[in-house]
Length: 338
Image 1: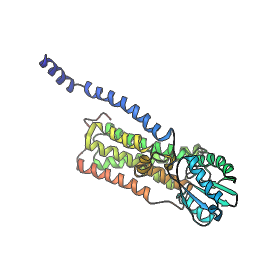
Image 2: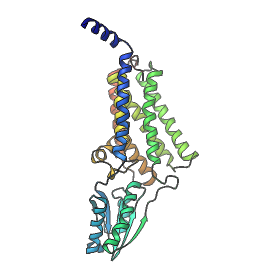
Image 3: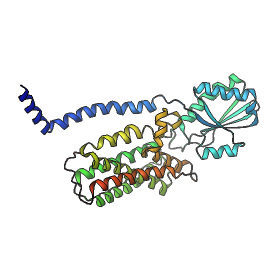
Image 4: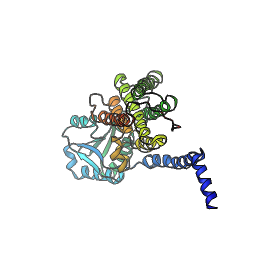
């Protein structure tokens, strides 16, 4: 009996049924993890220390402090307060994306200046909580949006979607080059990845902005960000393929889709994400891309070098690992179905 089982197992291992069976288990688990990761991040966003600026000496009054305390109680979180001294400086902090709103307190009047462009989900929470709190502490409330979203993107999700497209098509492009052009030498492979990244990014800009008019994009900057995102995710897949072969899609999908996209801050702003996701999201390619694109679209002149460095480190690091593993010979791709 043992000999028959051993023979059956040997035949099974050498047949296509083993990888097919493994794929069934992986895909079943992946479906649950995929749904779970997005549900965990987005189903019930909860504030975690929302940065807010406070302007006006009246904040020091009993009612002013009571309003802030009431907001913290209503949001079930603490507000990270800054006191810039003037509304102009507070607006500058909002432009630099260091605060998500401004409380201007004068006597019994308080104005909540939200910034939908900084984070639509945060602005909605602040705008919903403030009208409930102000009457309780005897203050008159005015709510204004000092940085509204573009008309074609009322929910602030377009940047998340175009980044998602760049991320997914980027690594799918890497898999398809591996399947359909396995004989490419490393230099040629990278060149073709750069080509589909440039053309794919141009296609995204053309359709989203020029054709649909959903989002006005600063052409050159947005094109560059999307192209850098696509080649980065393609190189990450190529790195994993050089390291582990046929199963390279697993860590790529896990890093970019299961972890990177929900934590990117594109669909739910970072102050509302679960703490672990909020901490790591901006250091992954999807989060870096969303960060750079968001600043390019809504806060021109305040662009940071950090998200570009994050993308560059991932791209160059992945490229270096790929080249070291492959040397100067062709990548056969003989063992990879994807």
